[in-house]
Length: 95
Image (cartoon, rainbow, N blue to C red):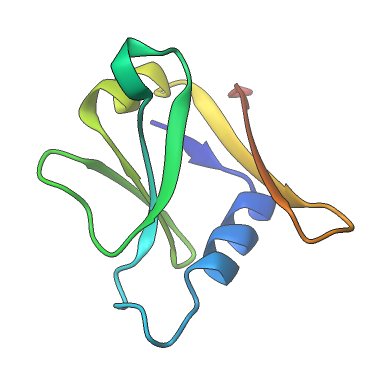
């Protein structure tokens, strides 16, 4: 199962902390457009049917079923640069 670093947890919680968003809001990762190898990441108010849910310390990630299999042995990290831009990265999970 996809694991989250503490940096990813913090960034996801910050991105989804808007009080106007539903409490189950999280980040959704899905397949790219037209079979592209790229993944799309968006803020989602709830999981879609069939999504795998990864939750840690209040940070929720919803994974499209195909993506859940692809990321099963990966770790999601996130950082914010000096300009306030968020960058998510995937790495092989460590044992």
